[in-house]
Image 1 (cartoon, helix red, strand yellow):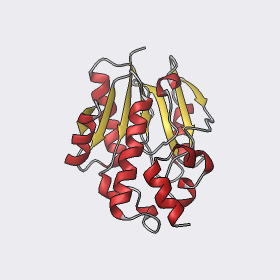
Image 2: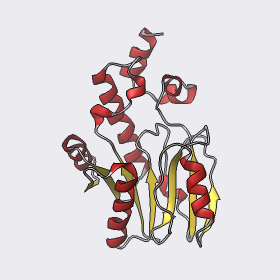
Image 3: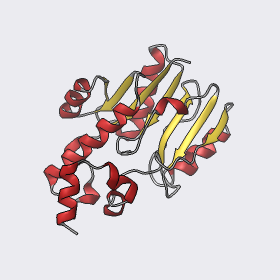
Length: 201
């Protein structure tokens, strides 16, 4: 298989709003960048495409060695579907789509299996943290409330095999103060952030 990784990244200064009671605006920007860098590294040797609509994110993505897919005004679902079409047009036949806030992400390429749609739900089994799918799949991006159930229903109606991967690392994302204080996440946080959090207990 020719596999690529697609990471939609919202503008850093709009990210992690639910952490506003815990982190200052500049700290949330720094956290969002750190998280996105972790996900890019988790792609390892696979080509990475970043879907974004902000100059700062585009500049960061290029610096991280990713290809930029400009997607102004499309929203998350539109950006993912447009990005998938672009990736397919470049000759890739399988795509791993990962959120940009997975602090424990590792080796995303292992999720790609021939003729298989792989879904990784978040730990609440509400959102879809990672999807790996043939670019020929009819499954459209449907992120938002209960996206895992929606994606699973569409995948089961498709012609490919379906695998739900309950991955304890990929199921952890960072949206809320409880997420960032999760013991497994705490172990991975950079020193500057651990110091800030320790001072605000």
